[in-house]
Amino acid sequence: MSEIKAGGQKEVALECRELHKHLGEGETRVHVLRGVSLKLYRGEVSAIVGPSGCGKSTLLYLLGLLDLQDSGSISIQGEEVPPKNDGEHTRIRGENVGFVFQFHFLLPEFSAMENVILPMRKLGRLNPKEMKSRAHALLNEVGLGDKTHRLPSQLSGGEQQRVAIARSLANTPGVLLADEPTGNLDVKNSLMVFESLTRLAKEKGQAVLIVTHNPDLAKKCDRILRMQDGQFT
Image (cartoon, rainbow, N blue to C red; front, side, top):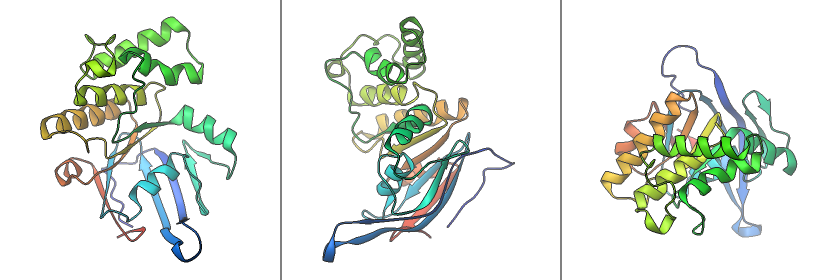
């Protein structure tokens, strides 16, 4: 595994140890992840690169507690994630992990602000006034303060993805996971979305892990982790 610290002692936001994952059954069963270990540090942006099918997205889904590993362990914000406990996984994910996917997955009938408020409402820490204020501030930070009441259909692709970034930051997660966040965008919007994502995460001291096929964006990250056949090389 290649692990390069960006300088100085950093706080570990997420650590995984010896993750293994198989997919499929019988003769089609594939060993997708083969003992992957990784540390993510607060305030640092890491990129995972590698060929299609090497395990990048599978790893991201395990780290985000959207799927279960076959073996190995994951700790988030110093708390070891208990295996096979859906309730605890939901709690830890809601409190500590933000996601940005290739497709924005905004609810089409909700405005930009309402989409950003959704994770806050689910977590239940803020009252309605506080949620609205935070959503407006986050949309301002991604350059959409004047479009808070627009529906996703009234926004461009790049704008929709920036709403998704604001939504991922709604609960101030310590860890932000992004799976091909610019995969559907042109060069200009890709750069804008990437810069919004990394700037905000660094300002807020979050650990960011981005899966990308874009070598130019990967080079802008603090670390590049290269994956091949379910392992870091």
